[in-house]
Length: 149
Image (cartoon, rainbow, N blue to C red; front, side):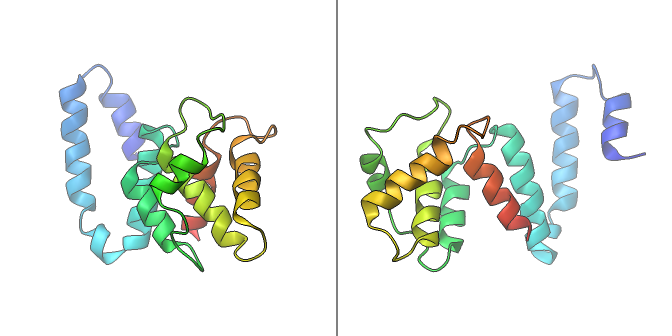
């Protein structure tokens, strides 16, 4: 029996307190993994966080992901992104942190090939105005894939 099967079979209707206690037990059990197998631990943490936040960034994950980007890391600060994207329309669930990651990702990928204004326009079109993508979590899903590798 998997953990999911056990919780599904025996946990239904037990109340929120039981679910919180179960989550705490799992968290404590996984804690050593944060040190012994950091990459896999953060893949799991990212997956759970994505479920909880519906594929949107918070500041901690955003700062981590941008800091890991190559070759530049942070090209624009959150304040600069907020200012640069004022006139752009975003889905109501898109966070400033989503924008921060997306625009910095494009700046890192297109480093030195386009002017800043074209990077901003292109990043917006790719991450936030893509008609083929159904949802507002494209940057989150992309970064989840890149962190699995």
